[in-house]
Image 1 (cartoon, one colour):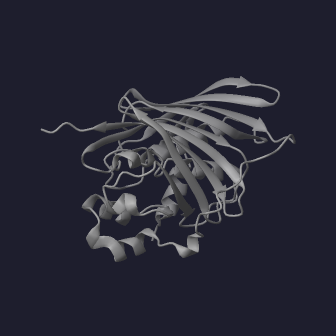
Image 2 (image 1 turned 45 degrees about the vertical axis):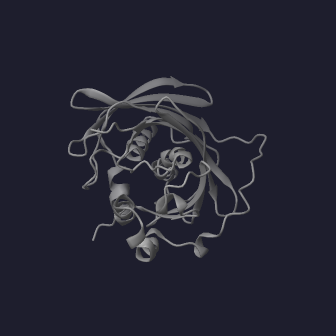
Length: 289
């Protein structure tokens, strides 16, 4: 049986159509639109395939324009902006049905030695082994959570998540807009730095926007909320094999004008800061009919 993780690795193996043109597909699912993390990851793979092997992604900035159609392929067009002595820049546009649905700019760098520091990982977070998985949460609290939460926990994914705080799922209480979630892949990731960065980009879009709803007693999958990613930025600090749990710390400094802004850091279990993320998304209350 093909697992969700096998499927993720498969869809990241883009088909090359021409020199700077690639085609990607979506996994078979009941999702109504393409998951944003998938588009980020596929666009990153497309860009990387036009870059010298000794250069690796260090930052990306992306914009979501239209919902992706899971039933048709996505065409990724790469523009080779610059090949410098130390840095390489690429622009990628993803298209469906003759329209751009997504764009990404990415910068790649040769590894080099320089000044180094990092912020520490939060110390007051329980170890993942002490927390319940989503399957265990469903078994324990399934009758006491809204239907949308139950559907969310049951959906097959290439990732396993263990949230530290559960109040968001079980109540409408207005909470501090921050959370910690342990995340790991449900299968092994090939020993390939390009794929490891792509999978990290994929998982970075998980749960992030939801944090901006905490202060309002809401959730992105709440029927009263219209939610969608608008932009996504990511900085890759240190490589990681993705062979263990990763702590995703998140906070939302602001929501206003129908938009929610959220930041995140991804830490390896040993405390190493792997990457930083920032995202703004549509957080709009639906009008009553």
